[in-house]
Image (cartoon, rainbow, N blue to C red):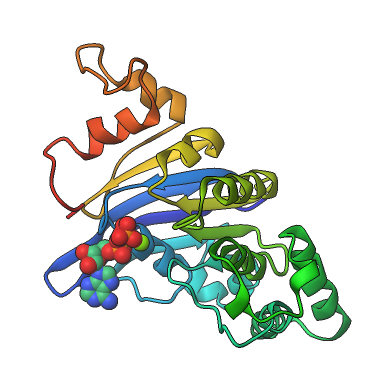
Length: 253
Ligand SMILES: Nc1ncnc2c1ncn2[C@@H]1O[C@H](COP(=O)(O)OP(=O)(O)OP(=O)(O)O)[C@@H](O)[C@H]1O
Ligand SMILES: [Mg+2]
């Protein structure tokens, strides 16, 4: 099983450093990424998908840089973008099939993979319907379905449960938990409770920097007794407030 390593990765937009000297090694498991708006979570994912170019540093899958691996790395990568990229006039089936073809699948393999991911995300019954008729949760599941094509070893999920009602959110959260076996899952979200219940490791990001990473429990235990939590017991939300909201800025920048 290969590891994914970001080594001193930096990305700037003009004067703004969106990701700053970011170093982290990912092994199979779920990594929850927490940080305020603008902290650099999506930038990190966009660098891993090679949608944007880094200014400095290396991103290695195993021992080789992902830019060198190119298509070989894209073949093991699944990405659910933050902004909904669904062509709403397409049926669920034609949408995943379209993405599957972009990923290089064809023929019987393409058909089988499409069926498998639609089944996994409970969309088989509505596969001939156009996405415009879907609820928010169904659209998110469809985006998740396309990310799962080809059994990706590295799965990047950028706010997969944004805007969902609690029931649908918990459903997607449970999917993610089930899917995480033997793969690297990076999950960016503002729903701290989702991360608390499924993440093996949490990354706390602020102003483009990785400021702390540990297991949810270790992070909770790291808060000093002298710091008064909002609730009666300390939760991961308190970890967020303690480490990321210390000077109560409006944004993560
Ligand atoms: N194409 C771009 N041009 C200029 N600045 C950008 C661009 N993309 C992102 N940024 C800036 O980089 C910083 C990091 O943005 P990013 O989208 O990575 O944050 P985020 O942690 O994903 O935030 P959110 O929680 O809102 O999704 C922000 O200040 C953002 O405005
Ligand atoms: Mg984002």
